[in-house]
Length: 279
Ligand SMILES: *[C@@H]1O[C@H](CO)[C@@H](O)[C@H](O)[C@H]1NC(C)=O
Ligand SMILES: *[C@@H]1O[C@H](CO)[C@@H](O)[C@H](O)[C@H]1NC(C)=O
Ligand SMILES: *[C@@H]1O[C@H](CO)[C@@H](O)[C@H](O)[C@H]1NC(C)=O
Ligand SMILES: *[C@@H]1O[C@H](CO)[C@@H](O)[C@H](O)[C@H]1NC(C)=O
Image (cartoon, rainbow, N blue to C red; front, side, top):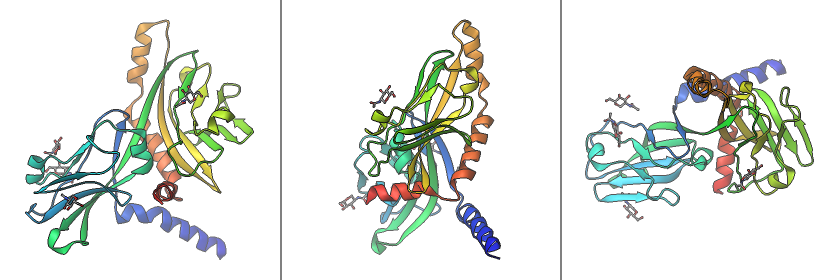
């Protein structure tokens, strides 16, 4: 009976966020420009304010009188006025940073009537997935970047995964290496204590090519910190590296993303981390 109610609870936890409000996922690479899509259902009037928020903090707002840009987004965000007049409220986010993912997983657009402030109507939610790309030659050492110096919570507990597989885990002095990565991976303890959670991967193999995610262990949960896409190329033959580049089909990335989402959603732990950060 207890078991049954537990499984029902988990089921509803898993299904709810999806059925309630399916977020649009936008994947962007570090340094690129991301377009967070949005359409206005109502005509933009003199009293309207368009707002983009990340975890309830305002990122950008625009009315017919002008625009406000929040700290950390100066010169990087815009909803062009001419587009807005056409009902296109998409947010252009330039120079995407890894922290745009870590802190601003959900972008919520609010449409506020100035005459009725406080009543914001949500238009849509966009999840921005920031992915960093690293390419390394087979046999060389790759560093998969990870940095949590900017996070308010910092623990000496890191886990790197490839899909569901653990590649490396360190908790203080204790560390373990995943199958196939024995003797090749490390997050040096002294660097981890300074907030550098980068994974050093030695003797890169073609089979290492995949999407990696780093997690911070906080109490009994793991919070996603960063995603890194590694591509491995063989140096002897030029055309081989080209093949390797086109060999990563988008579906593979999607599969990994879905695998991760299924894994991450039940605990929705990213929210907690983001929420904590703002306090
Ligand atoms: C917005 O509208 C355009 C065309 O009018 C459509 O292609 C796009 O999918 C819409 N985007 C959203 C987020 O609804
Ligand atoms: C920008 O901020 C100022 C001061 O808080 C406010 O008066 C103004 O209405 C804001 N502009 C928009 C477009 O929301
Ligand atoms: C909406 O505006 C953005 C730029 O702000 C533009 O890139 C995009 O193509 C526009 N979308 C439509 C459907 O016009
Ligand atoms: C983090 O550590 C890696 C080696 O583990 C190093 O290559 C990298 O430069 C360090 N990053 C920073 C920001 O110090």
